Length: 314
Length: 166
Ligand SMILES: Nc1ncnc2c1ncn2[C@@H]1O[C@H](COP(=O)(O)OP(=O)(O)OP(=O)(O)O)[C@@H](O)[C@H]1O
Ligand SMILES: [Mg+2]
Ligand SMILES: [Zn+2]
Image (cartoon, rainbow over all chains, first blue to last red; front, side, top):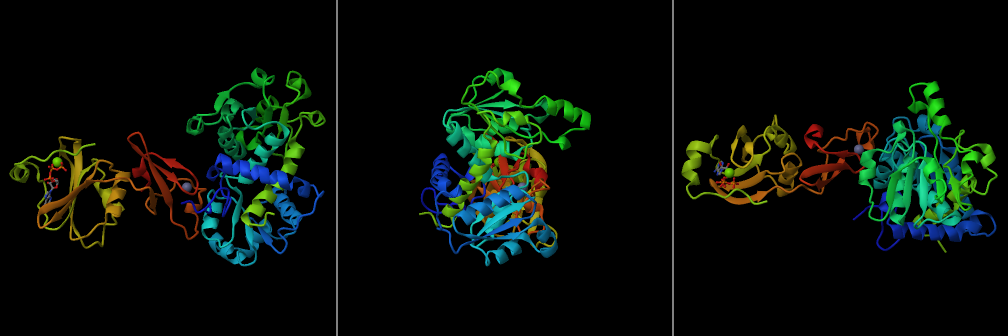
């Protein structure tokens, strides 16, 4: 049996990878997040995690994810202690992750971990007496990001049976990889749009469960009038041999008002943020833009996860 | 797959034509090893410099079933089925013959284990299993057609020619 799940449906010990979750598990978490939304907005008060402490262990900087976990914990009345990247390098010099986890597990009721090595969160969970939430392990997984992406689609467009275009760096983006695997569970049509050198690998596509969902490589123009969601990711400069090449390629993967003329009224645009210039700022005020809502949805999703792992829901 | 059928006069025939190495009294004969893999099989079984058991090895000998094969005969060491099944990672057709008092008392074909620890080294340099943590490498094993495939339990890396990572 998996170390990641307790007995029974929707009961988790840790949250390490989206692959560990069934479609039912995912729907369960999304529904729970919906219940927490008014609390995440500060419109309702819920102190169900009062007396609990969350430890943020960030071996790599990520202000946004860390703050969002902190907001989620505090909205539920819990407390947060932090070990920042700086402290990690000075305090924990020479100490193994296994030891750090054992020590911090005595200070806190739950650990949120970001680490540069793939599999670090799983290893941490194996060594932890308290629940571990993976907040990114190198090129590996970042399951709360995937869950908040799915939640955004469910709330702002639709999830089951929807047509989703993923655009940008599909080769290296861990966000995209996890999202595609999860979307495949929801009878979706997935359109892939990327520069040739940043295409999703054949191996990845072949490994997908395409029983219920379909995957196509297309250009944005071909599908812009039929999609429900346009998910844009950043194209990173580091992937290119020179600045010139980067500008040329990245420049042709920018969403402008002009491109959006033929879309469905209800089509939404998402982006994991931070954006650089993949989406022109004048798109922000259109009815399509949902990336700031998306960022907010990280809070109710993380509330649902924390609550579930700490058995504090109710 | 069915195993090669024994013939009635095999004793006499084998002694002269096929038994490349001498008989053992008590031990394990590992037959039908993919040619050239016998040194790695010993490595998997933890037999090497400093080991006490007597081992004879035949490499690249003729096999009617496989063309060529390796054979290992290990005397004086009890090897568990669990250990022996790890051989399937690199020699999926290997057969095990347990010998007691010169006679074969049990014969079985190796089956790849579901999980192996500390045998395969993950080639992903960013995998936690390659850090200085107190960690054992761990791979889940499955078959893809006739191929044995290993997937790193930590980073998800899939390996197809396992002999390169043992
Ligand atoms: N006492 C022994 N000592 C060493 N090797 C032995 C002994 N008895 C049998 N063997 C070897 O074990 C292997 C299996 O022996 P067996 O007599 O079952 O041959 P087989 O009929 O060819 O079997 P298979 O169908 O597995 O190929 C052969 O390689 C044989 O030489
Ligand atoms: Mg034979
Ligand atoms: Zn690995």
